Image 1 (tube, rainbow over the protein chains, first blue to last red):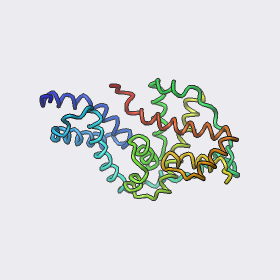
Image 2 (cartoon, each protein chain N blue to C red):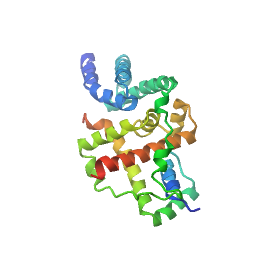
Image 3 (cartoon, rainbow over the protein chains, first blue to last red):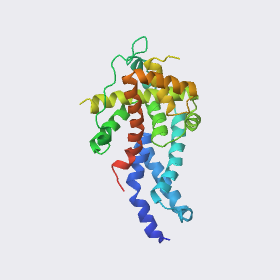
Image 4 (cartoon, rainbow over the protein chains, first blue to last red):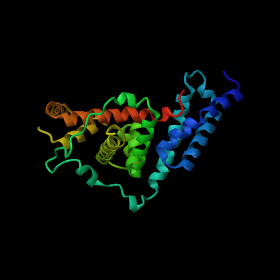
Length: 186
Length: 62
């Protein structure tokens, strides 16, 4: 097993990754830093439980997820500012005619796998994510970034499964449209 | 059951979050057979999942 100092250094080396992980989910750099600090501390004091596990980063990410969920729970209790009230049915409705057909048929995305090789694409994706309303983004990132099941998301955000599905649907459609405009359609 | 494109995309999205019923899957297939737009949207929503999962890996590889 690694010497304590060595272990501490390995943890520190992962700090930028952890910070990015938490920031993507929380959209609040102070809250993200708190989570990372708590996770690193928990990892240091719980060092023994890492013994024998293959991947330090995976283990640490698992710890961080718990801290992030705690922070989400705290955020969820704060009232949403009415200026950015989440429900914007208009945006999705605009994509379809009254009879539910596409107003404009989605274009093909040429070489999406190639996009995954480009740092610039991920910046475009992040910009699109930042445009999502706070609660919608929170639900979407819990699902797609942290990989939670819908049931867990409902519980943490205190919403019904139906509401959750609607939020995830809006997020996907909005992001699809945003990437079409800012990346694939260019 | 004949779906509109709006209903189809909603169901495609839900299919990423829950297990669809047999009838829902059949309805999707029927719609996909005649609708290029929804086939693309479906593929693109799955691609979004792939891309978002890689988001935190990218800037700090390794």
